[in-house]
Length: 327
Image 1 (cartoon, rainbow, N blue to C red):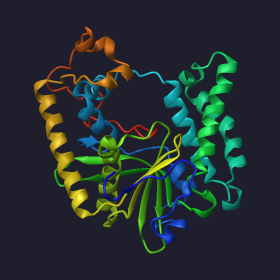
Image 2 (image 1 turned 30 degrees about the vertical axis):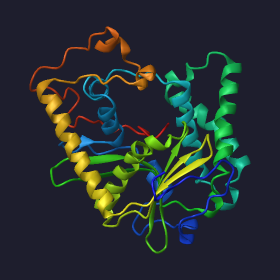
Image 3 (image 1 turned 90 degrees about the horizontal axis):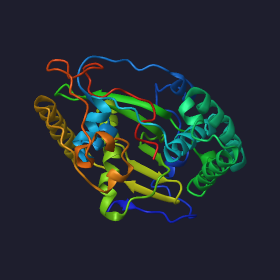
């Protein structure tokens, strides 16, 4: 692991980087957690925008970025992505409870009601499990991940400043950076911790930098918004009981800003030339769009005419709740 990245084995207690981070009130002027979670709309100002999920798509495969952002090809949910959505929802609701009531039993009791709510809002989710026995087994797997969360931290000792927080800032270039942060903790002294829950597998050491890009992206946004570099970035791989931590500094975030700027220039070049070439990798095994990919004998949909390369608006990156943080 990198020098300032630490891993926590399954079942071990988490040692906080700073004792003050154990009890975290809302930042001055920040909305109460219930208020922040209840805000349903996101303003859509003009201008280009980029989220960490779409940035990661372009770095993985420019054609995948095109399919998701320009073509907006539908992607049906999978059992894995639905499980991530459910676990995130249950953990968010857990912090609605009084601190003393945030127990494993209370968290388990949230799983079925949250699933019922999600399935009612998204029929595609409900359609994943036509068989009741399969649904019950899947719900047990989600509950096991919730149980694993309690091996990593004690939510009774935490008061997040924000949950499922939409954040956005505009760089000097005019590019807007935005996304949703699972949890933002702010210590009494002002130290900021960005927390992201993952329900997929923890990355091998060689891929940790890629996993941390999302967190550095968020840290850059928070730095630009609040004028303070976050003290700690914390990726919690719940299913495996591991925590990946990173302490950024200004040079880290300036480097991230340069990387994002270069990435956006590459996206703009691809848009101008229409050259959204595929980048084959092992990740192709999980791609929903192989039928349209030349690497697999497919043909992409026609690009919109010149001058209308933003068929769904000018941003090239529509804001979607819970994007990118599920797995």
